[in-house]
Amino acid sequence: MAEERLVIDRVGHQGDGIALSGAGQVYIPYTLPGETVIVARAGDRGDLRRNVSPSADRIDAICRYFGVCGGCALQHWRQESYRAWKRGLVVAALAREEIEAPVGDLVDAHGEGRRRAVLHARRTREGVAVGFMAHRSHMVVAIEHCPVLAPALARAFAIGERIAAELAAGNKPLDLQFTASEGGLDVDLRGSGPLDAAARSSLARTAAEERLARLTRHGEIVAQLAEPTVRVGRARVALPPGAFLQATEAGENALAGFVREAAAGASNIADLFCGVGTFALRLAENAGVLAIDADAAAVGALARAAKAPGLKPVEATARDLFRRPLAAAEFKGFDAVVLDPPRQGAEAEARALARAAVPRAIYVSCDPASFARDARILCHGGYRLAGVTPVDQFRYSAHVELVGVFDR
Image (cartoon, rainbow, N blue to C red; front, side):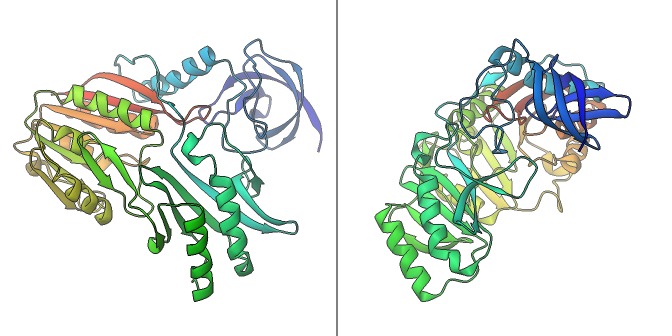
């Protein structure tokens, strides 16, 4: 593969450096603006061979696996420049949709680190490798320690290796979702294939020795020593197996704080894509809430948690908002609507809301592009985007959360 000398123009929205060449843009991981690099090029991708003139913003990575593991893209960038770039992702997404709105400073919500992680296990000639995928690859990088995870997940790799070794005879790709809870680690296995009695017994013994709160396979309980719970405002939520949570506790608190502030004064709120109640249970301290999500297990957990003392009524409903979005008429009587959709956004719901008369919409997003698309729909329907706050709970990655507040 021929080598080529290129100059990095900027960092793209996925965290790769972008160089401009006569044949178009070239994407080169782990490079920074202004750097002159030697790369082995294949199409629009470049593999860094040598950095001829490192940027003054380049710093040492905090992890020995950086550059091999694909989990982090930007540990090598000075924080001030990294933060400006990440805020710029939101500004650029709005600009592409021709939306003008104030964008606040990036809020650092890393806290103690990520409280959930999906580890991958693959059988190799040397044994079982447990870790994260390599950059743009399905190859597993065996990892012993990850500095961006919360301390509660410190033993996740060792436990994952132990579980994977017990199931290695099946020779199937295995994923392990670890979640830190008040009761201990909650682990859900995916892809192991059916478990026979011997495997169940062995896994149950491992769960007991490692003091796991719960071990499940595709949601089916293998062993449980304690109930995995998390505190959400005044309520305590018993987590369904494999439940979605915000990546960091600090991130959840930051997003929830902005949502509560924006919803202050509302007495009747709809929380769409509510999950286990990250926002609904906190909002219910001051308002009645209709909480809707397609995940019936999450909705059930929310409903049980909503019985906590001091909360106003919460109506929790399982409904697929992509197949059956709330119609404009169903928004009647609400003072505020909270939307927290997955990465693809909530286009159908935005179109319905644009035809409704809800005074305030609060949109939590993990994808600036889909948010900006839906924001354009809301703005064309009579809303004004009063402001956007970007939140960084995936430090060193290209992912950024945000909260946007819309007023009629």
